[in-house]
Length: 122
Image 1 (cartoon, rainbow, N blue to C red):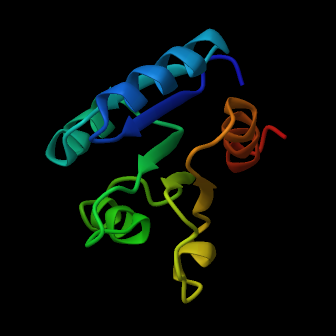
Image 2: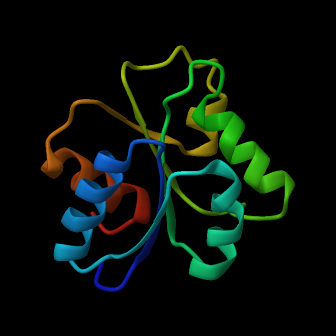
Image 3: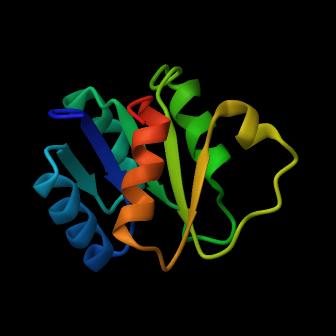
């Protein structure tokens, strides 16, 4: 777990700050961005082990974001944890891709547990 790199993408600056602080306290190296266009650049800078994606916009879902990254050649084998307001309707595509879901609001322990499972550290 120590030193694992996580890229956090959210448009909610308060959420970014809270997640960054909590993960940092537990030994994760965290890079965060609030702009989707920055995430592509940050992905290369960070060489992330996991993408933590806050699914806010109703017209965009975690799978679309992951597929956009993969289309650009990034993150084909990178685990994804998606934060959402409610469990999305999923035709199985996101599950087959390995996206793990955490429903907001969430306890930090739930997020940490989900991250460990996604990284194979559980």
